[in-house]
Image (cartoon, rainbow, N blue to C red; front, side):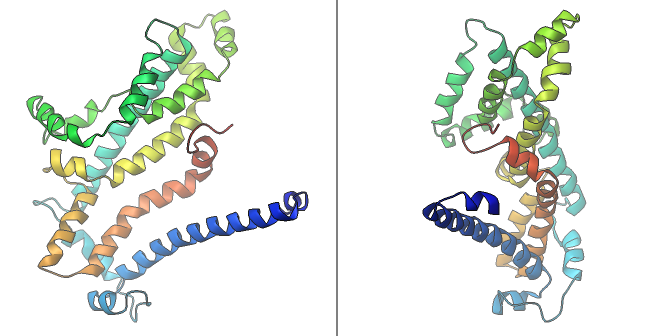
Length: 286
């Protein structure tokens, strides 16, 4: 970094330092929010209300234990909600990302009359509001028996989403000579995809899978409306927050929020290079 700064002009150095300070401030704010949440979970409710930003006088670690007994929705406890969270985040995201990857590969590498249609359809759909489709989606799920049905997680197979655009751009820029070399050795179309092309797309597939999983893990609206009998941890926190009208326990609320953040923090720490290297806002990084 210092060598690159030496080669820059003075205005460029000033701008570079200014932008770096902005990003550092944003990063610090996120870290501070997580620490504040963790700290608040170890206070009493009175301390959280009266001394919001101060350190606890006594660290009440039992709050993190009490979360597991106090967080409950319709008779479903903490550990069952944790299982539901994993179920509703891992299965749909895995199926969706793999479907989009395969669909985009087919449309980008094999030319047929409608191969360019999905790209145009996705661009149009992304500009339309989605809120008006909620009632129709619920009615369709009810007619198909997918409301309060855990097997509905396996129905999230769709090639039409923003991830398609990333995969489409990646495969279009991936040389077809890899496939030709495999075909010379006797590989068929399926072997070319699963043994040659898909392994090369694994970094991008992993990055999009992780970001999609984090969004699905934190989402509570779909489960709250369509699967209320199998609540997840975010739904449990949502309901516990509503119950604060009758019992004020901000300490338990923040402790529960920190629990939900732990998997996301671990995944980002482990895969941060994969995410930042392979995905950027607006395209694929080389």
